Image 1 (spheres, rainbow, N blue to C red):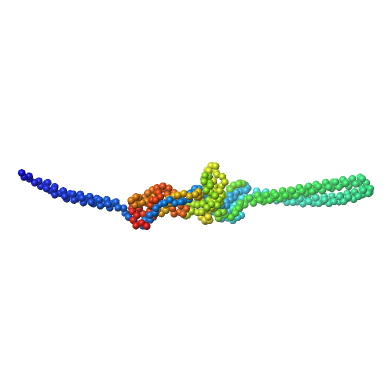
Image 2 (cartoon, one colour; image 1 turned 45 degrees about the vertical axis):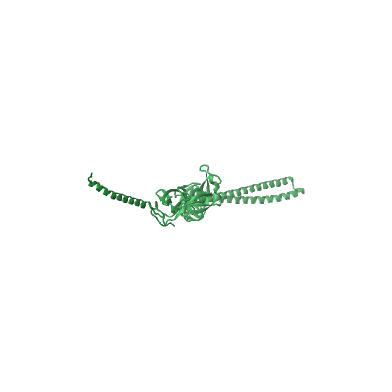
Amino acid sequence: MKFARNPGTRAACMLLPISAALVALAAGCSRAEQAAQAAPEAVTGIELRAMKLQPIAEEVQAPGAVVSAHTAEVAARTMGMVEAVLVREGQAVKAGELLARLDDRELAAHGAAAKSAEVGAISARAEAAQGLASAKAQAEVIEKTYERFVYLRDQKSVAPQEFDEVESRRRMARASLAAAADREKQAEAGLERARAEARAAETASSYARIAAPFAGIVARRMAETGGMAAPGTTLFVIEDPSRYQLRAQLQAAAAGAARTGTVVRVRLDALGGPDLEGRITEVEGGADPASHTIAVRIELPANPALRSGLFGRAWFRRGERQAILLPQSALVRRGQLAGVYALDSAGVLRWRVITVGEISATGDAMEVLSGLGAGETIAANPSGRELDGKHPGGTR
């Protein structure tokens, strides 16, 4: 029995090997593409650094403001209108230099009256002295007369009535002498009072001239021409620009970290640059009951850029602790996020978000607070390159 051959079946049988070959070729190409995609790009010139725990200073931070070590608030000592202001803020002044003048007409009138009273007191004292001299002369004459009459009385050569008369004149002369001496003392006291009042008037007159107490600069000026000045009203603030301090407010709980003579790290944001070294000169004895802080004065090194009022921070050392320090060159910022390129288990760099703390005292590293552990390896010098997903080939 014979069967007829189907041409379509024969063609289908011929296509099967070709299709299998095409499928195998396609599968091979797919595996090649996957292999090409799986191989990360290699980058060269990457410095890898293993992170490790290092001992760093355990510090407590305290904010503060820069103040002059020598500051004076120049206030009015008498009531008067400001007649003239002779300096401006920021101006350098010498010790005793005139800063402002007050209207001194009333003070001048008081001074003139006091001087006139002094002249009158001098005249009164001279008159009293002359009266005392006259009383002394009369008393001396009567005293000698009385001595002669005593001799005559003893010789029975004078009548008792005559002796009594001389003795009476002697008592009157002594009384007159005592009164003249009292008047002279009163005149002397009056002169002293007049002189004191004249000196006081002269001193009060000097209050109309507002002068610098020492050489420095005019940090603030509150006086204005035509304004009224009252006793105790601050008109100027003078500060010594040669010595500045940071007045820091340290939490009372950390007061033990502040000791006079200790060197501390200070940072002034307005100056930039590296941290400064300051020395503690004063530590407040008690804490502020409202803020629970103590004031610490820290002497700052000389710097022409220093000005009072600048904000600053000081770090007081309390011991040591272990921490991971990241070189600043390794930090990569993306918007508000901070991160590093760290090697994963396959040896590929991956960008990872981390949290960092304060910059170190040397300014080249910062503490890692989270996101990176000891023993992990990072790219220390990304230099702005995109390294995520790349292999650090040819590292150094």
